[in-house]
Image 1 (cartoon, rainbow, N blue to C red):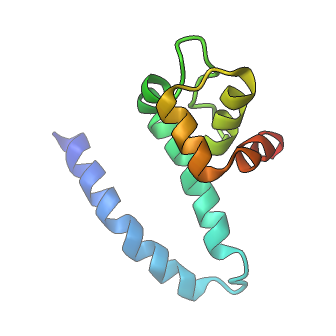
Image 2: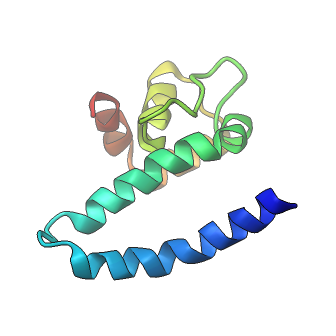
Length: 105
């Protein structure tokens, strides 16, 4: 139960602290892009089970690698031909070029 409470507290504090932090950042150029990239990497790791079950086939490149974006993992599965229909739709929304370029980042 304590773990769940800590999860709720952390989740509720994240957004207000992110906005507050913006006021303390001296060089704001790239702040939101950097934050979005960090969230992307976190989501790739945190939701790996969901992504692995819904976006790729059983033999696909697995989501969840530390410091990798969702787009990178999608790009590797696009390249390898291991996306599910849902994965292909997400790639179409993001763009194939973006996902393939994300592999190198």
